Length: 447
Image 1 (tube, rainbow, N blue to C red):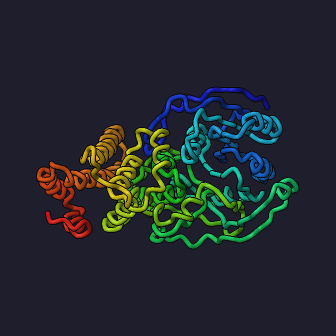
Image 2 (cartoon, helix red, strand yellow):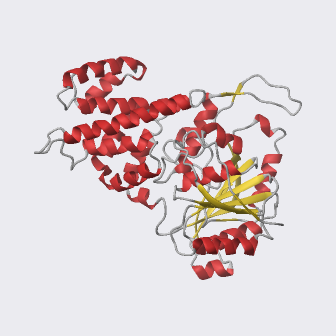
Image 3 (cartoon, rainbow, N blue to C red):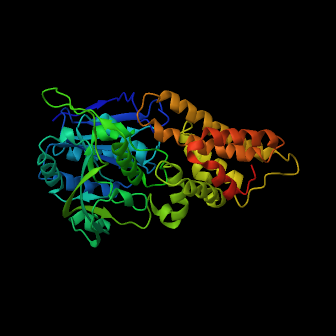
């Protein structure tokens, strides 16, 4: 094998990844000059001690038609880039390996999107940089796929297995020991339960075409649960879109409906999830209801209007802990409307918020208005850019949330008479959602 340095032209980013940042990629290191059936995508940030054990579990795979793409998300630890290059040289004779170095820290969802956009493989397997696979995982997953005569007729197929939880120290990793501390048997698939619990783990294999159809991983999920969100959107997509099926002889079936996702669950424990004291999802363990409220606002097409409205108030009253994180995310993704919206709710309804101060009684109210207006304008721009996207109905359902709270904020200004008139027009425009009675009851309005 020969390795080459190359630059990447990622001109097409996911539809839900609102901002395309120029010069995302600093450098790539690769020895992969062919297309493999499966691409294993591994986002990475700082934890170099775990990565070696992860890579060794991939080298041991009994199925060999795969490649590995590691995306370093601008790790802050000293010497990481040098260590990753050494890892590449150590293992490039054993793996089809690519390492991508990001210019900036973008978060796990975007790292996956970058890797998936980069690969030409048909099947994608996400793997976190501290988890490992049983040596038979890829073989058994691929056997399940090939037991189906024509997978082109089933674009909604995904493949997963049961989970071992393990808790290793550095010495355990070094000698290849796995300290198992628990299991998770994947439950029988019931998409009706998907709004309450994530029924699948991150290392579930899916088609790249599925990822493309739903717009990739959503970078709004900076607090975690990006996998849960991905499965919800995929399931909803396949329940609400007719698909054109092309056969090998280029004949076309009539458009068909497929009933959501179609998970194939291998009833064996082939995926190992590392349990750590701290991690990306630790914030949501401590602040579950707050994260769940954020999550609900992103999926108004599956949660009830009442639940969405209650989540708005909960974010506003309990979201002070989010302010710094939201400021950081706005810097990373200045064209993502949702972060402005969440910050607006906190400023409008927060327990510590005072709409008036001695110097300028309307200062905060107009600051809030500007944030809501920013989210609305960005969402309008997003709708225009994606007007040909079949998935627009989901993006559009965010707009009424933004417009509603801008108008409620206006009721506290000297323009309240006009705001009342605008609210009546708003209710008429979104008549199908029956917002009038629900909002009047929850916010004690009389409009």
